[in-house]
Amino acid sequence: MAKIVPGRMTANHSGDIVVFIIGMRVNHPLRLKSWLYVFFAMPRMLLYLSRRRDSGMLLYRLYLGPSPMVLSYWRSPEALQAFAADAAAPHLPAWRWFNSTVRGRDDVGIWHETYVIGDHETISYAMPPWGLAKAIGGRPIDGPHASARGRLAENARRPNTCPRS
Image 1 (spheres, rainbow, N blue to C red):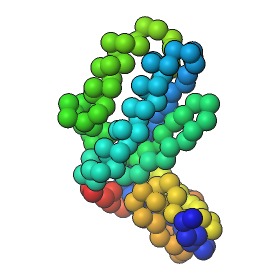
Image 2: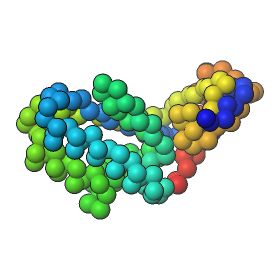
Image 3: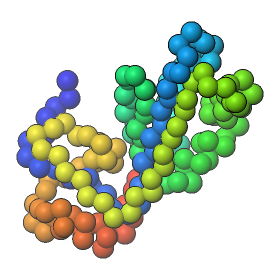
Image 4: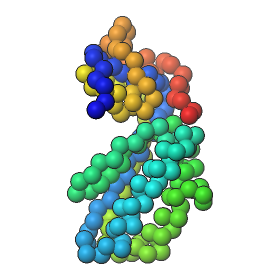
């Protein structure tokens, strides 16, 4: 189990960050070929990205349930788009398979959302590093950034400090 950090923490970052959320929904459980391929494509992509720190993906969390999804943090929209278009990476072949095999049918649903976040603030209390603070590092909350207003103002003033891997 991860070590709990006592007290209040915030992400040690300013500037833009990308939050990318992607998920799927099995619409027809008996059509195994369609949804199993989609389901297993994501772990392959996450493993590929985890082994390549220069890919731009900073952290991901996989959530299982009736609609599996991945929440991920990226250093820039360009890094996310470069991965999606890279012929040597696992995304493009999976996307091509989906379009040639499943598109036009309702066997499995997929969705994603991309957010380029500028001004932001984070807080955690008595938690292991989580979310953005885990992705890029955290620091104790004190002084001028003790309030949400102070953290937002501080992040707006600071230059982009997102790690470039």
